[in-house]
Image 1 (spheres, rainbow, N blue to C red):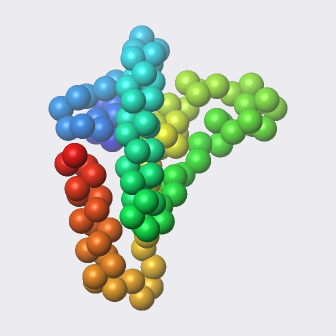
Image 2 (image 1 turned 90 degrees about the vertical axis):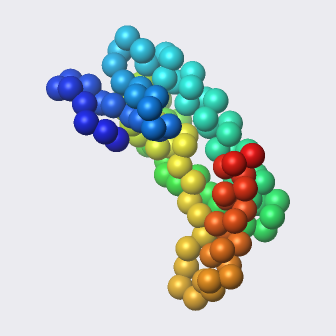
Length: 115
């Protein structure tokens, strides 16, 4: 997140893109997030194919069926939570993870990001 004007939330996922989360351009942002989400899912699937266990990094509660139904939430209600839900990845990190294992994860991830 980068600095924003009062009343704005600015999300800058690719450096100079500078997407502003305002009612006027939420549709464009959510369209881009869908594209990035497919790429995130592709990266996760490729890591899994290579024996690297990954998961979605977080869940936006307002996108879960129970809360949508009970409180009438939609994806636009909390855009930053939605972005985190759709774009985050949890990578392996645990006590006893060897440097070799760390480098394996890093190497595969770098290769996928540069593909």
